[in-house]
Length: 457
Picture 1 (cartoon, rainbow, N blue to C red):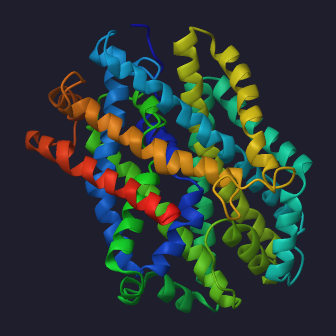
Picture 2 (cartoon, helix red, strand yellow):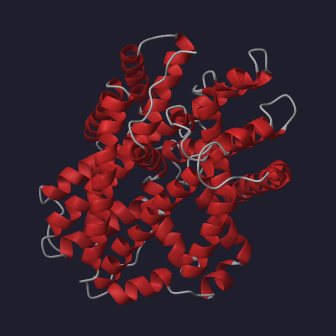
Picture 3 (tube, rainbow, N blue to C red):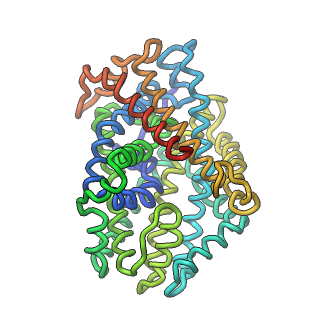
């Protein structure tokens, strides 16, 4: 088996994997649903699902990567044999990486556009939410502006990956993630000086049964479980690829707990930035793009030195999005190199073109193709692509990993357990096989079923 690159440090591995998990959902979804579904009570439920469901799934993907030292392109046949039918699963799981990048690249371009817009003072002064919404709509209606932003972030992402793991991905992502955490703490610290800090944090984290009474316990549990599963991006090999580069010094449960702690810290601190600002300026917080590009833009325009705070906030958002972009690009490049036995440089060039082409439906879905609604209503191609990856490929990929380590003909739970427990740290017990074989698949199935009922019911 050819020699494979390794991370130069454990910190590099943890920060890069955290960068893959930390994304836009940590900022524009988690704080909102926390405030909506019961504050600190929801956080406790979320952490429960993260530890007892998210962490086991994370260890599976990392173990497959570390044991095989291969990406999705060859990992199943490496562990289960060349003639194993498990190898056919890789194709639809690989497609998930491209589905994710088909819209995530465009949204990352939005962050770059607004970061520049913030630092150049284009948020204006005392801008209303309606005016901020009109500006956001104007950007979406301009395919040329979005295209230039998308090309820029895709070029940066692939350019970093072209330099290799240590000289490119680790060298750039490690300081970028450290700066991301510094920006997060800096912006959260600023919130303590705002007039609406106490009111905002009370709405965000004060334990409340009102959200559970209003929405029902089942909906709250489903929301917490969905956020815990999807925040880690399990199911498309994006985390697995970094397992192929890691050493065996620490057990995978230990590393997985560190990763989930970093991911949860970003999600929690994001609320410390958002809610005090919204309550200080009398703006109702929204969920999704409206929160970031409309509500918060209006808030920053009302602040003293708003261009400064807004610019740094969107720099934080850009780093969060770009870290995920780089991680998935590295997975795509590794897969291409193994499947086609080609060089890293050629894999970068080919995939750069592919990503730009498949980003066009999402990009044009807000202008030239705005009359096309794939899921009905006012849905866009972004909604369709997000539905395909979040509600189908990710959970089905997680089920595939579960089956691979527990079913006959797969890798086997004992081999998974041996790999998972190599090194120092927390170890998984042998009796956990029933939990992996019966409990986790049922939970994932119920999650997928609930998503379909919510969307099409």
